[in-house]
Length: 269
Figure 1 (tube, rainbow, N blue to C red):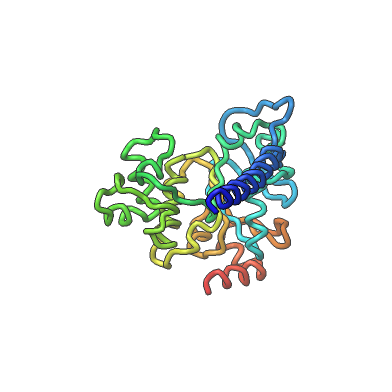
Figure 2 (figure 1 turned 60 degrees about the vertical axis):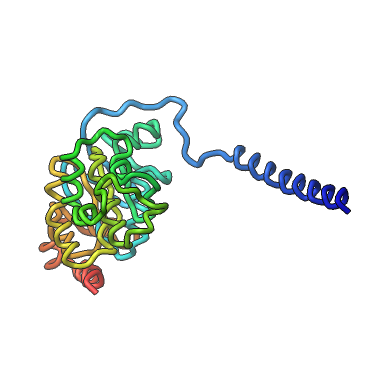
């Protein structure tokens, strides 16, 4: 019986190994959706206009801009095109993003959304993966993201160990820590998708008040329908059916654009 059992187990392992090997080979043969161009273009140094030709959105450098869309998926799609996570008719300094090295795009434009995860390791390394930020920079980012209280409550502070996917933190706490991580990175252009959707109104008000100051002189786009955030933006861009239909300060749009009023009112509910 023993030889038969051994033979059966060996056959089962060989079959499983064969199936697994075929899956690995298929994975290795996959072609990435986005690849570097054969002849990468050069793009000027420093902040420049980032434009999405599909929607008509133009993100002006050095400003705190908010994007309010009647459909949240439209805002997310624009942010993904601007960050070149999907292909699109997007330009930086007038140069198509598809003509740039992906590494160049990633270095200059950071997209932070709610699909990002916290990973296992020390919280300090989680907030500063490259290890280049000093303590004051991390502390300032935590304050701007209204996340300093989270760290203060941990037994070892920034040297506390984060569990897989940050499961010891609530959804709102994870969102604030992800925002702090994006602020520590301090990219030339930061794209934030619904960064306050999981926090209470008081916390959201603090973040809205501090975010513009934390990003002063840098280009920031926040996709949101929260009046607390919209009222703090230098400029609000209103999108309907994937197209820009109005732009201006929050208060002006409230007076002039009924569709914007309806969209923002849903954000308050």
